[in-house]
Length: 278
Image (cartoon, rainbow, N blue to C red; front, side, top):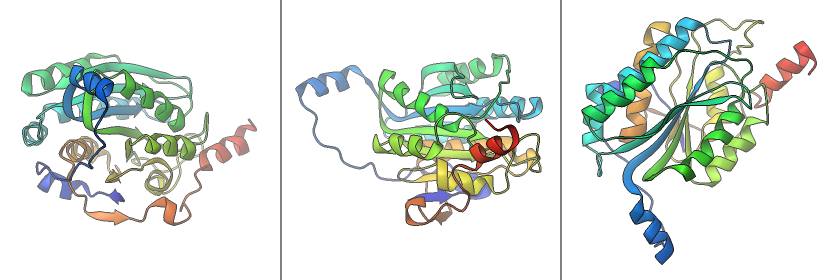
């Protein structure tokens, strides 16, 4: 089941943990040794942020600040304490074209204020960059193997994708999403819709629908859309709270598998082809 989330509802109920973890088959002896060697955490969270040229410098700065501030917020730390292990593992990378992904924060453990402060400071001090094209599929395909490299073992594995436009480069997004879901990974989305769609930026109407039907997936997956620049940081905090606390979003969305996408999952590729013929 997928969900669409209102920012206010999350922040009111944000620190309440919930959701059951599905049972898994007992691992064999070799797998048990591997699991014992890995530190147990409640969530392995990959934060994948769009740095394409359609994002202006102010948006990039606010996005970066939003994640840094959310990680040290009292709501986030309260949610962390409510978890069974009280620990999450986070990695943070920026993406643009299909071959352009840059890890800003490799896997880091957050288990309280000190480790949260260290991660937030590391995010905030990294220089802001921009790059061409938008490949959500490339971001997903880059993120999935990072879980195998993680020194932590999470009860949940989540990819958090933010972006302001549809996939227009690399492989189609839906197959990349489906391959990640087949591995038990959940994908959540933060579509950024603070500007009017324009020819130059390849923005589209109803980017939130596109994310709901073509990008996100997995048990409890959800979208938090940003439609007001002043709510940017608030939305990031709301989404991070849901991902850590595994709370229950406000309004269900019909899974894409049960209906046709409201926005074509190839709309970005079509726009690019129509405009530049390649």
